[in-house]
Image 1 (cartoon, rainbow, N blue to C red):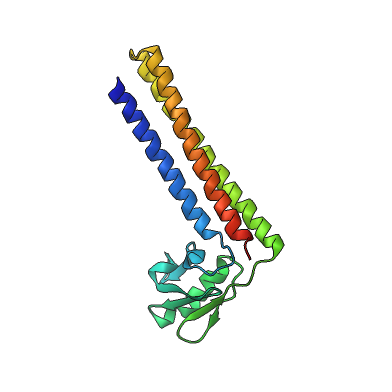
Image 2 (cartoon, rainbow, N blue to C red; image 1 turned 45 degrees about the horizontal axis):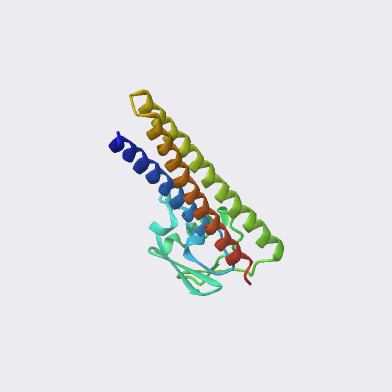
Length: 187
């Protein structure tokens, strides 16, 4: 029975790691005043009739702490890329120099920083909900194992271990959100 219990733990940890990875990718998209190529991660460009991620049609880099450069692989895509960035509604006004786009990242206002912190906390809460759902699934698997003949004390130990894993992942999320909040609020 312990082998089956270990499989439940492994599956539970794997699902939680996916939730944490998703949270990390979402937090990267929340800008903290410093220019980052990740800010343009969700931008889609009309590439010959099909929506394509910006990173597949251009190089996206940072020139300095306040400027993002977008160098298209085909100069004919410059206008489409500009349209895609504007349509993504990120609050950026790209400037074209004929060969590439320069995006000046404006400094964040206090109000905007608070909004970004709220968004980061909401993403953290979404991750915690996913972890709680994973915990419920793991507890259901343990109950199924009990119905299949696992001793009751082993079931209790399994449930305690699942709760300990849940607490660890929940604390990790709290730490990530605190770090992001400090990053956002630092001028």
